[in-house]
Each structure stands twice: as structure tokens, then as C-alpha cells.
Length: 64
Image (cartoon, rainbow, N blue to C red; front, side):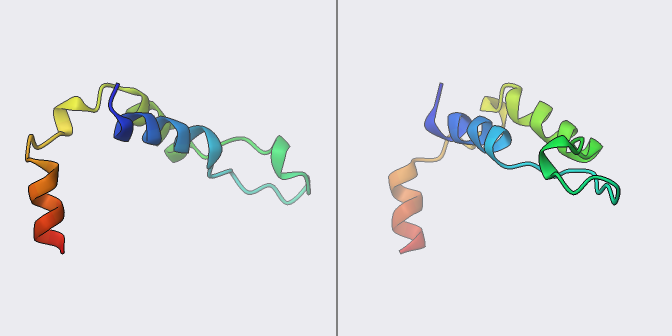
């Protein structure tokens, strides 16, 4: 698994977007927002199809 795919999966577990709930002040008990569930499902799918195949070193040089 590439590092970028690993980072996406980890981000989906550490960061979340919850559905607001005025009755419960405890954020941990709030359900995830449906769009966040979709985003996490996509991050956990095979992301290799989204790779460009470009040389990362060349891309870094262009950015500099």
C-alpha cells in the first residue's frame, strides 16, 4: 500500500464530520454526517486508479 493511500485511510479514522445534535453536548456520541461516511468509503477503496503515474521527483522540482 502506498503512503498516500495509508494517509488517506488514517485521516478518515482520525478526523470526522459529525451530524449536529443540539440535545447532546458530547461530540463523541454524535453520528457521522452521511457525506463523511461516503468520503471515508471512497478513501478506503482502491485509490490507485487516481494516480497519475508522474515521476514524483519531477513534480517536486516543478513545484520548487
